Image (cartoon, rainbow over all chains, first blue to last red; front, side, top):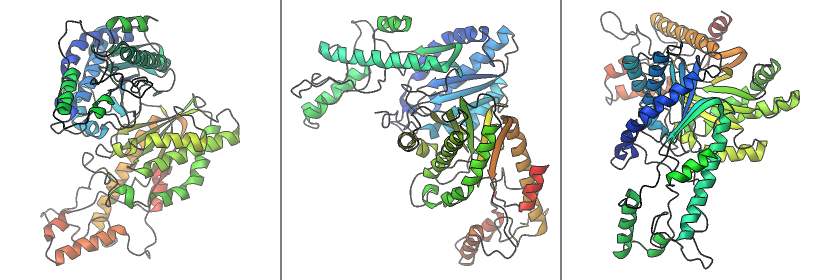
Length: 278
Length: 278
């Protein structure tokens, strides 16, 4: 899965860059990001006043990727100035991570103008913010042990490392007929298979990346969680309906729909809280 | 220039990946690489037995890029074993650098199979060799100060940071008529302009990257130098002849040829030696 899954690259009509509303999420995250950076800077980690090492896990492609980077850089500079602890302009190393097929080229092409903008608007000299890429699955080791100050990930942990096993009965029949993920309509064993996979993946994520953080380093993870039962249809439900319509209209074989399950899970807020506390 | 120049991406008939004979060069470089790694490991730099930080400056795209990485990893493991200094399997961080338009995607797509091959053939566990990208010009700051153990660059320094100025006379006439680089046939002022640009660029390169190296870290630079005067035509001479033929056949305007100069210079061995010693 990790060798094929990716957001749609480029800048065409169906690209991630043109269709994501990620920037709305970032606006909500920004105050929390600043608070997180404040705590990080006050913790006085080794080498942090010379060079802050930050990663964005699941960075995707196109302009959105650099919106996150901009917010992180602005937060570090703003909080650094407020705290007046000589941290006003340390070098910032930002590592962008996503899967191997992610369109990193589309991000790199934007970097020259992004660097110039940072210099013009934020007084960040060219060369004082260095943007790198680290392709690979965030469910595996990405950075050397105890090497990072701050890890950021926003709207990514709903992507599982694989489609859960156990979505087909012993008789080879789909246990999630007509459904493409763990929805309210899925049978309990399907919901459990998805929850188990999420639990396994999120545990792996927390274990691996906490090893990569320096002691007292920080992680800011923004997850999509299940809403109230009263919530209406989400995007995936709509996609599911559309695919079901294709089956009804005879444009798609029913078996294909039945065997298709997204590697996607939105946990409840309680599950996430509980796992982080553990 | 640094925002447009790049090797031809992808894997098509005209791609760099399909047309480069870079692997022949690597074979010649390998013994020197091993010697360089041996000296590096004996110098006992800070943190090197935990994590070796290496960069390949001007990595280009496609399979060739990973041939260099493979040679570096193999050399570190081989020499580490020979020296039996607990350095047999430190984590290796390899930073691939090239300009912003370089086709990094084509390299990243090859990484999963490359990591598996390293594990199978070299016993390098997945996660013990981490490959990253750092897009940008190698004539500017790429890494934090005193952060790198080893910098490698092969067949790249012939690319200048810009076409030299002064290739047009005060009257707006090309000083390098019918010629597309600093060839034997170029007038002395053109040859001097190119040499000056090379001297400036190479000095910048050495200054910036020596600041990025840890004390007693090492650089291995393989440059293309001018051969004997008796040498025949090189690839650029042939390209120049072909472009001149297009002009003669009326397929290209003479002014376009006259105003076209490659940002490319091959210095003499003496010039390079002299500059490194300085």
